[in-house]
Length: 469
Image 1: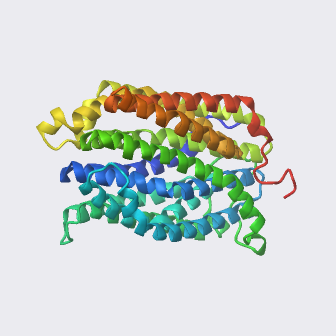
Image 2: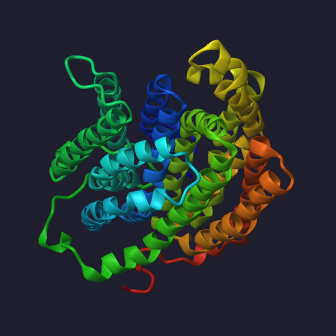
Image 3: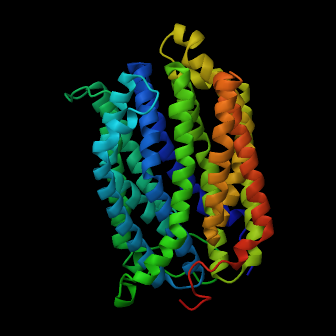
């Protein structure tokens, strides 16, 4: 049968685009709705949200591999075997919740090591403690959403994310400002709104997973599999197998460490390099990231859909279809990110006005600094499209160990030292910090292109079928 084209990519991508966009809107709304409380509150909520994501990134990155297994097994026609990997993901989400709760008492000591002001650290610690209570449902939603996506049904994650978005925005209005008789909790209100919204999204995904035991309840989106069939009910053959779980961790942990260590480098950059420049610079940088988090999600959705098609093609024994899938995915993501870059360069000030509270701040504070940084960030948009497309394709093939080392080396040995030198040795300030990120994306995209062209991903046996395990 012909290789999947743009039609299959778009059919898979649009629910992912809505799902990821809804997730980013949650963080964006938190930032915009907390901004009127002041720079300290804004920096605490936005940086606290990123710090929480960083702490959970090891678990979320690990369960992300569920999609790779589901896609390859679906391509091979083994949907009963694929279902087991959803249970493995839920098992890991329970472990993530336990570890997150144990980490809460240490937050104060950890944040005391940062360069944030005392008011920012106090508000951030409280915010993060509340958000960590939702660790289990955040990781569980990621596991189930990726399992459905691997099978070709990307709408479950979309429904879960849209539910979480609506609940978050509504509860932000109630809990941050104290409407409808609720206490005005400020930054803590944003944290509770996000935690409860995550629980609502997980409930949607869990209900869909329960219903998926009934073959009539599952309708998969078109994909490259020749004979898509519905998910089979749980059976004795579908029980947990330690060998499969161990193999999943072998490929999933590098992906989780990939996310965690790269994001840890970013958090060091933010909490020690950018924070040393002051609250205004930190808030401006966070405003730039808030805008980027919304705008890049459609491209990430396209890259994620491309990864599903890559996994299904490999599982179906058609690896020669993969380069074409990757090329079509890149052209779509690059087209979107190119438009984003043009907007950042052409109208940075109007985009930053969302975070402005008064005319003084517009002229001298977060808006003015943020507009400069946003215009610079236009330079990394096409590079980011390349990184997303190829890294997702390599992950779908199981090439997670190499991508881990590439990101770690480039982030920790190249980017962080370069950012520190640009900001403090050359005294380039926040603009130099932003240019260092452009350089990081350039080196990372080059490394990923060379790795994919080398073809090592063709020799990886993710599911163990080739070796008989």
